[in-house]
Structure formats: structure tokens, C-alpha cells
Length: 128
Image (cartoon, rainbow, N blue to C red):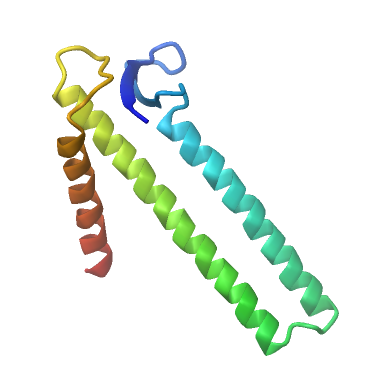
């Protein structure tokens, strides 16, 4: 997959740059779609927990299993936030390192390092 930056001024007022994958889907759309899926799963877990509680069937094993699933979903949400931040970071990098707005073949190694640095920075902030 490769990325390019597209100038998008017809949706929002003012200038805006959007990171697009080679299939035309923006990083923002990918994150939004994944978040919607996570919301559906979280809703299903809440319904299941409520159903068990209403029937007095929420024993320790079921509670631990539901807690495990909720923890998994929370980790996935964090990954989505990291993906959005990395996409924003890559967009900025592409804009800073290309003479034109469009770039189909960025220096992948340099872009990857920029993203890794950003994720490391975010992890350091979380630990602080």
C-alpha cells in the first residue's frame, strides 16, 4: 500500500490535506470504520453483561471473560488513536518533504521512522 496527500477544499472551509491510501480510502475513513466496529462490539458486550446480570448469571468466570473482552477493545481503541496520530504525522511529513502536494512514492524508511518516533513519544507521555 502506498499513500499520497490530496488537497481537499470542497468539504470543509479553508485548506485541508487528506492522507489517502492507494485504494482511495483516507486514513481518517479507515479509523472511523474501525471505531464503528469497535463501538458495535462494545455495545454487544454491554448487552451481554446486562443480560447476565438481569438473570443473575454473571458469575466470576463470565465477569472475567467480559472484562477481558472490554480490555481487548480498549487496547484496540488505543491502537486506532495511534493510527490516527501516525496518519497525521505522515501527512505532515509528506507535505514537508515534497515539492508538490501529491506524492505516490515517499521515502518509506524515513516516513516509517517519523511514525515510530511519534508512537514512542506518545508511549513516553502515557508512562509519565
